[in-house]
Structure formats: C-alpha cells, structure tokens
Image (tube, rainbow, N blue to C red; front, top):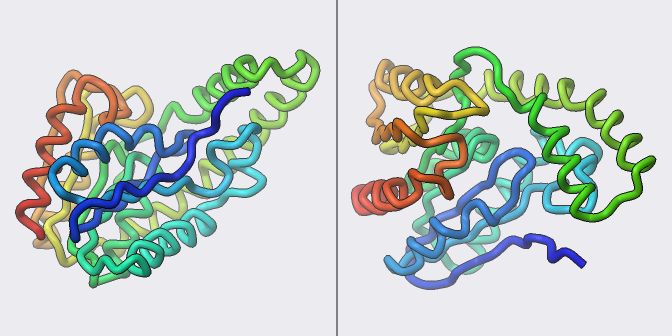
Length: 249
C-alpha cells in the first residue's frame, strides 16, 4: 500500500509561512523548503489542494477547479490564523503561485510572499497538457492498476486536461490584471531550464510589477528546471527565501 502525501504544519516560531504546491503535485515538493525554514524559527504550513494526492489522478478534474483551489487557499490562511499566528507570508509553486498571488492581492494583512516557477504572466504555452497524462500513467502503474482500467482512465484524462488548463489560464489572466493591489515586496523565483512553462515568465512578472511601482525580489536560477523547491536550485532558493523573509517580517 503506497503511503499518500498529507498536508503538514511544522510549528516553530511565531512567524508563519504557507507553501502551496503545484498542479498534479502535493505537499512533498514543499518539504525541503519547509524544514529549512523551520530550522530558522518559522512555522510552516503546506496544505494539499482539493483533488490532489489521491489514488486517482482524475480527482484533480472531478473535485478540483480554480475556484475550489482558491477556497482551499483562503481556508489555509484562516486555519493558520486560527492557530494564533498573525504574521503570515504565502508562497506557491507553479499553480500554487497563482493562488499565493491572488491572496496577496486580496488580503492586506499578509506580510508578503510570492511565486516559484509560476505563469502569472504568460509567455506562450506550457507542456502540462502533454506531461500530465504521463504522470497519471506512472501513478496507475505504481498502483498496479489493471490495464483496461488504466487505458480508460488515461483516455478520459486526455479528453479533459486541456479544458481545465484553459480554465486555469483564464483565471490567471484575471489575477494578472489586479497586480496593483499588491502592497508588499514580492518574491519571484524562476528556473532557466523550466520544462513546463517558459523560463521568461518570472522576468515578465518582475517587469510588470516594477512597471506598477512595486518592489520585487527576483531570483533566476539558470540551470534549474521547473520544480525549483527540490531540484538543483533548492539550496539557493532556500537561502533566497530566508533572506527575503528577513526583509518583510
């Protein structure tokens, strides 16, 4: 029986950080960063977005949606506040960064935060539609799903993935039109060898924010692929986030 990822809350110091994971991902991608920040006396909460980290990748489509994930994000902030934390920063990886950005636009009590490898400003297409069925196939094979069920499910996923990605893209465009509402220094991390989105997305977000008169803490990791929280960039990212948090708290 494969152990499913779960949300986690590392309770340490009085300052809290929320970390939102990517599409087709889970809280495990945030664990290295969370442990690093915990050692620096931050409390860190990493929820799991609805439909993720289940036995069936189709749940992302049948249970999840941009609006549901926004509700999850608001719920995560409310939960951390209910635990007595008043100083809270929020970051997100890829899809998670979309909702971290929306939170920073709408919740002025958040101290700061930002994005890791997130297409807030689009620079062309993404490879998610091609990669998601492959990730789903790998999961079914790990679970030893029978061949017929696997093929039926993968066909269904291929029929639905583009529609949900279009929903996410439309939702993100509305967030990108409200960046002027952000009133904190905004962190942007981007890998130069991002295989999922254009590596130009981070710099384009930096440019847009600076055009609006916002302060941006931008970091580019030339040799890093998409998941910069766990890949070759993670040590540098951890230090950069730590330095950023020292500025805002």
